[in-house]
Length: 296
Image 1 (cartoon, rainbow, N blue to C red):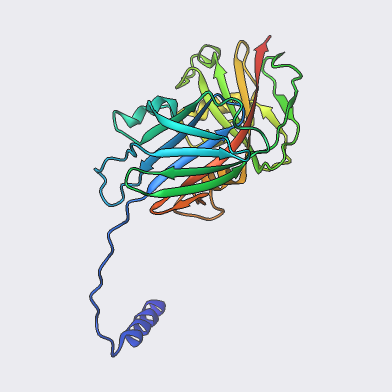
Image 2: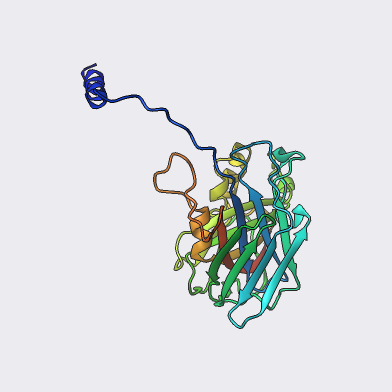
């Protein structure tokens, strides 16, 4: 009660002799968000553009007829064209038929994005906005355990996937696509088949992940997956195949998807694309994959 009274006194003292001013709240600005992450060696590169819709939730979020160009250090250019949304993302079950944005792709680009290369992004929207960014792709690396692209491991055990260090990498993102979990864990309910789970190696020098125990860190708040994740702590069940993809990611990617150490509002997105009424991420990754087959 004393604290409340003190606050009231301070407020009265601070406002004494002041006139109340009319305050005009500015209309939120419409921003274009561009999310472009280059993947070294991939034949198809994607870009996802959308409006924020903060000023009008019912406005069209699509960004049509944008000119998107990525230029390499040697002057070569890669141009993006509009494509089906499914080429950029997998639609969630709760998305319904809503339009979420516009997908752009560049096809036939397998030799364009190289590990260690630096690339410039230029975007010009139909209404004249110009956005730009720069990314340096992480260096090449190799998975050394297992030594081959496909390995058979003992069922109901953990297996360490190990890789060499990649230069200019801030973090390694590990995706596991698990085939056969519904049958292996029956009668436990597995919501998707195959099931995609994601893990994280928290620094550029951490080059080992235990499969499957350390995959699924980003899925632990999904109540539909709790029982499945608990079972996977025991090891990879018999007759389950796991496609493990390790992605070495640059600083731009990490800054866009990271969470703050204390941030009640959620993720802290640090943009690497800047320009007139626009923002976003221009990042890059290098990916390597193996398949683990659990057998009795």
